[in-house]
Length: 121
Image 1 (cartoon, rainbow, N blue to C red):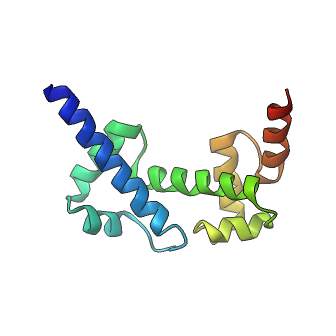
Image 2 (cartoon, rainbow, N blue to C red):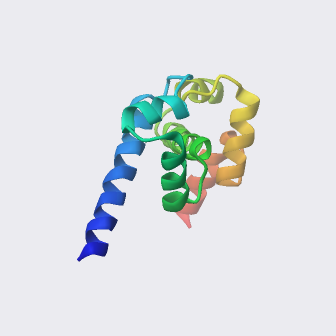
């Protein structure tokens, strides 16, 4: 039962961290310091916890959540891609495109078409 408690605590922690990023998704200054302040952990403890639970660095974790939100926006709206990037806290569209392509294997502009094709098959 100790493992179950630990798993639940990890899940609660991860959900809280994800919620924090989602609630501040447009905030360009959302970063390590802000998360450290809100989750009441040292930077090194927070980094190790996120790394062990997700395999990502803290900045990679934040970027991943932002990109998942961007993917949702692309599928659920007709927003322009640079507006989507801005909406999820990226102020550099080229960096957004590159990051999106690394995470989803296609450019943001191709994503909607790729998903709708896979749903039809």
